[in-house]
Length: 143
Image 1 (tube, rainbow, N blue to C red):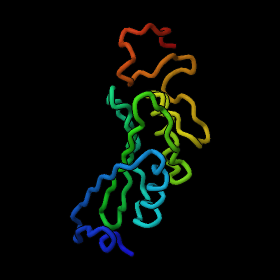
Image 2 (tube, helix red, strand yellow):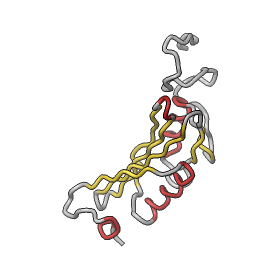
Image 3 (cartoon, rainbow, N blue to C red):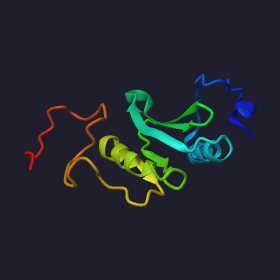
């Protein structure tokens, strides 16, 4: 079944961009549905936003390149919550993107095969893209 039939996406090369927000418990399930049923086999990006009082939001964009359709999947983790399901089992490309989110935001992706820092040294304290991270936090000199 083509994605046009399923979601009414336009034909003729016109792009269709969809945005879906799901509870964190359905994050991996929707990604699997998008890949297997909708044909969104390409993970374009995975990132996060710190909305301070509202908590963290994780988002991923997956695409069906044949039908020119993109789907942005979002989930809110809530204040003080920092766990999300890993998408590595669905999209292998999520591996390093999830590691970057862990490094910068402190989000722990449950089920990730190798969740560790990717940009900063292992002894770095804190997560620089959190709104609570002080800009003037002392850190060791660059090595």
